Length: 273
Image 1: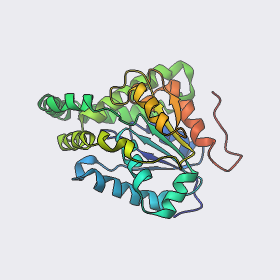
Image 2: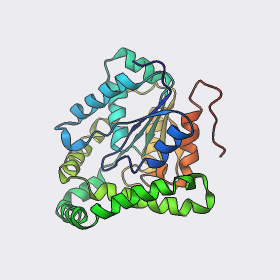
Image 3: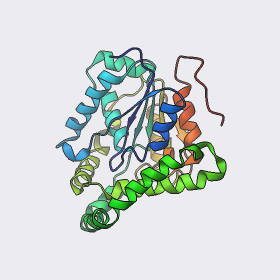
C-alpha cells in the first residue's frame, strides 16, 4: 500500500460519473492539494455483487493509506460495507479501522427498486430517447458550464446556478446509463437487505453514515435502527438531502470538513461552516 499520499477516495453509486462529482474533485485537488481517486467501475460489467466488491477491494488495496478518507455513495456504500464486514486482507482491514469512512445514503430498503423493476420498459425507452436526442449536446454543455462556473462553488450569490447544474448532471448520469447496469442494480439490491444485519461493524470507530428525508432507499428510521445495532456508527443528518446530499451546496461544507479534519498535516485548512 502507498504510504505517502494524502488522498480522497470516491466510490460512486450506480448511474453516476465524474461530472456528478465535479465540485468535490475540483475542490480537493485544486484547493487542498489532495489526490482524488474516483473508482469508476460499472455494475453492468459484473455478474455478481461479490465480483463487483472484489474489484473495489483490489483498488483500495493499492490506494489506501492512513491519511485517506473514503466517501462511498449509494451502491458504492453497499460495496464498501461488504468489504468492511467480509475482507480477509488484514492489512487492508487494519487501515480501514484507522481512517474516516462516510457511507452516503446507503440503501436499506428495496421498495423503490421493485418499482423500477416493473418500469424497466419505460426506463429503457426514455433512456434510448435521451441518448439519441439529448445526451450528445447536454453533457458537453454541462462540462463547459461546470468548468466556467467553477469559481462559483464558494460564491453564495451563484450557488443556485451551481445547484441547477448539479441537478442536470444527476439527471444526465441516470438516463445515459446502460439498461444492463440498471438490471444488475436491481438484482444486487434485491439480495442486499437479507444480509445487512448479519455482520459486525463494531471495530470501525470513524464510520459515518448520512440520512435524510424522502429517500425511499435509505429511510431515516432504518438508519437509526442500524445505529442501535452498531452504536459506533456516527449519523449525519442531511435533512432534505434526498439521495445525493453531497451534490447540494447546503451540505458541501460538511463533507469538506469531514475529509480535511481527518488528515494528519495540521497546515491543511478546514472550511468554515
